[in-house]
Image (cartoon, rainbow, N blue to C red; front, side, top):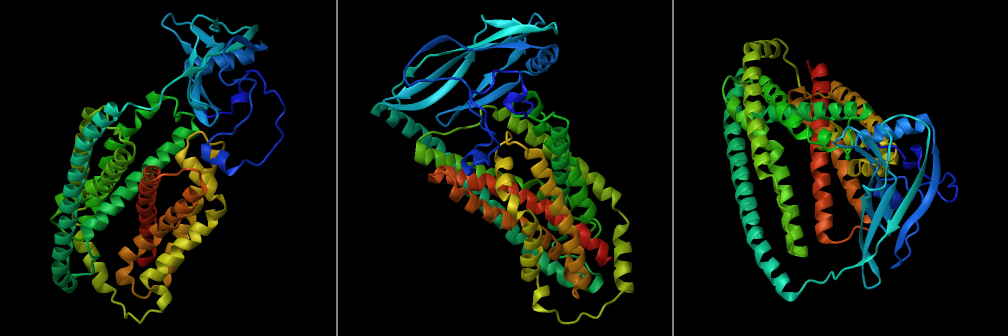
Length: 499
């Protein structure tokens, strides 16, 4: 759970020395630095109390294992392509720290194929490491093969088919209703803003669709703040997929930080309009949530169609609770941001009226599509050679060097995005259109990275429409978030030059 290699801990060494080698693409995708162990699992051959090794532990070794046991750390192993976790130790109810030195392995098979494997630690055979002292420990294991019939009877299949189609119908109806409602709202919003823009141009320079632009900036700042927090947690070894107590804090953290997105959104909106801040908060609440929710519904529905099973959330009450907390945080932040920005409207209008500009005809390479093409390509090229590492790091938390890979790539992309945004805005003659142009140009790097994900998925051994939709959907949500973050960074970089 500390995201450290298995052999950093004083366990039994591998059977043969492993020379330095370049990881294969399959191993990279799996998300681990794979190293052979001395465990021997012969097909359908049970083994009892097999000695793996006898290890002499120093005080430093015991101290390292003691810390891992208190954290309830686990190590991840693979057998025949199937991953399973092995617990290292635990702090029991008697406040004693125990080390699990024996593990029972239960591989399941059907006919001549291994279908599944899991492990259970033996609570009878443990070592007390509460006191740090030198000791000798025998590490042992047992293997118990179990045959399972993985073919369900026809009646069971029919029952499950009827059940999941009931849920599937509800999911499709909810998805269609949500999509239709949101698209209709956007249509009316754009129509209303076009009518208002004719009057607004006579009074002052202002961006088209200011509330929607404010929502993008609010969500971008919110997600950027979350990314920075995750990097800090990772640096402090506080972020691990094996520590559920830490991961359970991320949803409430995201929800409470929604006050930031609401505040930034209405702060920007209030600079150009003294009304409609509640609609701006509504757009902030739905701009990322609606695509994320619809993508999740599509993934769940596709799995139900192809596999005949649905994975519905077991804690729906918690989901509703955090949605309510998010909405409250958004409106609190939105109210504060709107009040804080009061008085900025007249200031912005005065600045623009005192600095009129003669706008010349632009070259083709300064158009919005060309700026998106070039402005997104340059940051993407700086991380192109590390894209496989980046994708493996994003989709698996156990990749070796994931922190340094993602952190370096993140800083590089931000730096290049800022420089590109400032340069393009400096030479852009139509600076009355820089608002949306800066967002689209800055966020376009995420489009390149997303399409690289399709190429990445094509090279993997993941096949099937549901898995493809799930991968592309998750990939889309990640890089939609990056689009908003980089678009926000590009906006503020351009605003420094434009003003």
